[in-house]
Image (cartoon, rainbow, N blue to C red; front, side):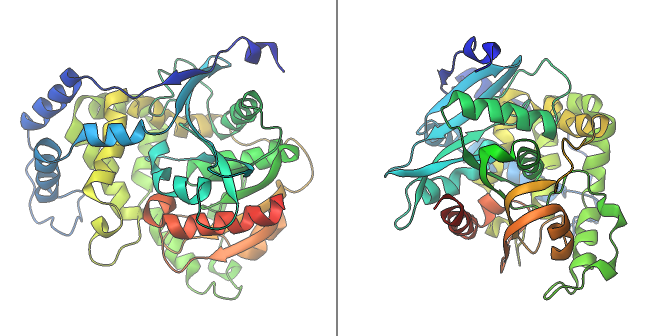
Length: 388
């Protein structure tokens, strides 16, 4: 074990927001200087004031942080510093003999708590294998803070995760991820394939692949009709935040760190844009789910360092470490039809050791929050095959 790792103690951690912080949040919401809005009930110009006022009123009068804080603290949390980076994680042991360990990685604007719904389904299922779960917060996100070091991106984070799993006693493990977490998981697959039973991607992440070069003609596999048009339309909704987070994370961070409703509008609009819903996006992401995620960013003051993950990925692009397939370990792709990236299977097979390919009947970008049962069932099936 590296000397740096033996010098770092893993310490229990409890989420504990003070009454003063809660009171300050509510005071800021009550004292919001509202921006005029008109002819925007369709969300054409961004979040309508009518919905933001509804959300604000709920946040102040009905939302109960203490209830969610207690639920969060019902699991065992830990923090450790690895290579000068503070890392927070939940560690859940299987409720019956464990079939192995899985590390689950979130993205932006997710938090570790997006995996709340899959925890019992993977660690304590009614039938089938159960797994130990390690659910970290990305560096600079939530309780993996304060971040005071640059250079943290999917590649370096994957290396941190490999060290973390060694510290926890898992020589071999499975990895699961969506959004940035899918790219972290894919980088684990690339750089640490010998450590993995397999990698499960709920977003079709292939490090180093230039998705902008894909054309409609690339989508010629069974059932892939319309995928190109769908994912390019979805990605068009991601340009604004991606460009700002990449070009000026510190600048936008000042505004979002100072205004809870500014932070909520920035995050919740993306939740609405990228989830899969028919009549109302709260069908799949309730106000409590939305505001718990926003509250974690608010109370930890990490919206700025979380946004930096984009620029760090831009400044430090993927560099192959070997000449074999980019993803050599067995790889599962969970294709949620309303996600941001939809990859043709033939292209995935050129770059990855595709061991499972599941096209889901529904679901968007926030798979563990939107469709935890679908995700967990597919993850269990994949790792049952890989772990034996």
